[in-house]
Figure (tube, rainbow, N blue to C red):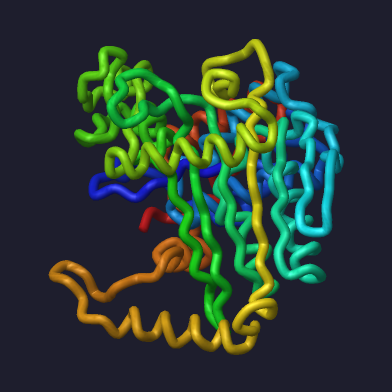
Length: 370
């Protein structure tokens, strides 16, 4: 479950090292296996974490490894849970993730939506009793690779204030839409309903950096740039009532419709160690052959993308980008030159390896800073 959101300001890039993508992925998988996940599930989670990191989404990258490990070791995630179907119709499925790590429920949800859409045009799959699942784009690419359109959304623990409120009331509830492309990367929008990802505030706190104005308020509802005050307080919705209203609708479509678990009933991954999270997700897959037709639609998406790229660029920009394009470019650089990881995050991963009794990340594998 991603809470990625675009913002005109961001956390400054800290000093770090470039680590080969596969080395990073395998190291995270080793840590997760040591915490109790089977090899296949550890690989799935590590793929999600390293992919986010490689695409420049550090808020959902390898820094999350520690919290997953801690919740696994505390028994707040079921390392062996297998999602099961609770209810189904020709065009819908309700899955119970049974408190598996969120990536397991999310992958099961999107894969069922894909399979049913390929035989029945459209399928909506709800997942309940799940947990934080990483970026939603990670799962939508499974659909776009099969030339399907897909949507995903998830609720989350209440860390955001509604527009007009000053206290935590709703999650940074993300929405993602994936559009396949003919011969090129898919167009994937993956955004939170908050002004920024809460993970960016956590990362800024780890790096002892202030946050930009407009990201959060303190416990009294006052604007703040202090990370500790922001983490005790609440993040803000993007565009005021628009982000707030969208978060509210996602809360009802996921937590409400799938499980009857919304707002304060959703457990906080970082602060609540008394119960599982009970997060819910919704995945919808659509076969273009049921509408315009797959071939014609893909051709139109290609033409549409070319037209967008051909628009005159504003001052300070080289061209108008389509959703997901910047992240795809970052991934390509990471595959060639390694993934830049801050020293703070590297040290935390090394400490976690020591706590788990496994070998640390080999520093000989790091590449020169770029």
